[in-house]
Image (cartoon, rainbow, N blue to C red; front, top):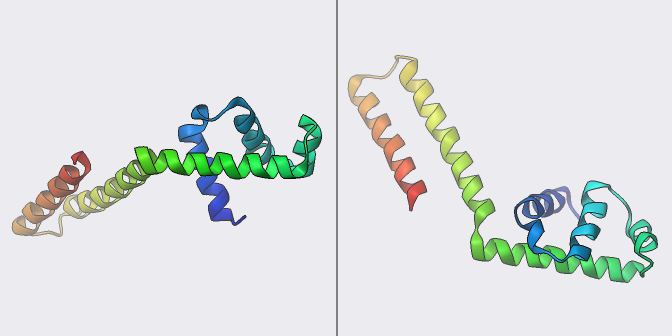
Length: 119
């Protein structure tokens, strides 16, 4: 599993983990948060390594399905991107290097960014 996949699974777990079954939550916590191996988790629960692998795969699949239906992680990422853009625009305005016309254009851009977030 790639770092990006691990990061994404952890982020999805933060948002939707409580929607998983207790066993899937426990397996994900041990694997992603405690960094236990599949074998160590299998020993912990007295199940096969394959059962742990299946539980992880099914948990991640469920988390991705929740995200595709609810889109909370995507909304957070879009909001963070919008905040970064707005912050850059504000820095330009505060810097005083913009003409009055450019300042008004920048403020309209900020309003457009905010309006898109509200959709």
